[in-house]
Length: 222
Image 1 (cartoon, rainbow, N blue to C red):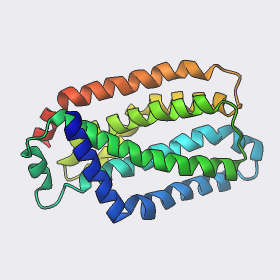
Image 2 (cartoon, one colour):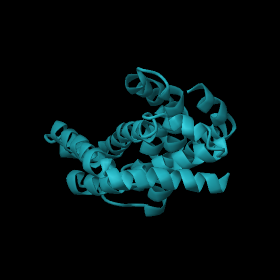
Image 3 (cartoon, helix red, strand yellow):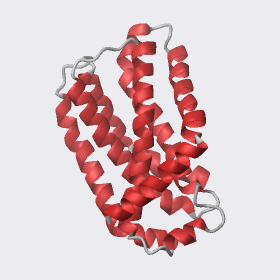
């Protein structure tokens, strides 16, 4: 399973590296989102600073939709998905590989967005360890959930519009928990941000388990 996961993740990441879609399209899209939020709150800088964690994770969620759509779009042509299904690879390995590739793309975008938040919104770091732990668990959850719902929508003609309707309501707990944890990590709240990691970890564990156990069936139905 782990060998197959490395093969699939490597394949997806090589496709991204050669096509540069994440670099040339998704990354500029993420920065434009931050700029638009900045313009919307520019007249009230204290409010912009307070809202920075929530705006950051909203931008990450929107970028995750593009990353998930891209993950399955690269196999939509020329029967590539059938080839993946008939390859003999472990379905659990395929799931883990595609989820890991999506998560890797998100990590790069989060670094870029984090730098943008510091520069544009004037935030500072209070607890870097909490910041990193939150990002790791939230990214794992987004990658796993996105891969599960991405394969569910992959075989439908309306997948581009259906995928946001499937994912966004489901990942609301990630948005809530990650925002509150980051508010504490950035020194914007006196709340104990570490307690939110339980929710993020549970969300990631549920969708990783669901994907490992059910991805084969979902792939056959796609």
